[in-house]
Length: 157
Ligand SMILES: C[S@@+](CC[C@H](N)C(=O)[O-])C[C@H]1O[C@@H](n2cnc3c(N)ncnc32)[C@H](O)[C@@H]1O
Image: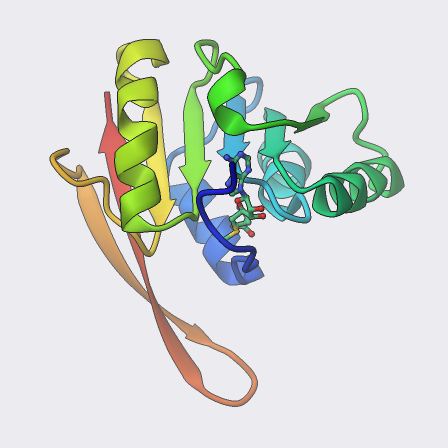
């Protein structure tokens, strides 16, 4: 079941999320609801990570797979067309989210069950209710026509 609609994170936000999470070469990044794959592709291309994107919508998963192929990253990025609740994420060093607050509440028990100590979770716009963030970043994107402010929540297990 889908728990959030599709909306892409702007690229400056993607880079800032990965930077704030301190993604290092060789680490494993999961994007739960990966849309067109931009976060996992950027994690591999610009941060040297291995990355897994999970996406429930077939059309988006196929788009993400195509983008991974075009970027020449099939050895570093895997796209899984599935419900995120059905995929084990216990090898994650970093998990990225751009869902909704109520969706984060649903994902929270999975994160608490599966993530190893020290794993980071970075959420665009929406908090994980009940968790204490390491930091809350207010990020103003100078887009072409207007300034847009985004909030990024960083957590550590
Ligand atoms: C707001 S979009 C974020 C896309 C991408 N992470 C980004 O930041 O650009 C949320 C995505 O989560 C996907 N999604 C919603 N529920 C899901 C579920 N249960 N399992 C996997 N993907 C899901 C939606 O189809 C959508 O593509």
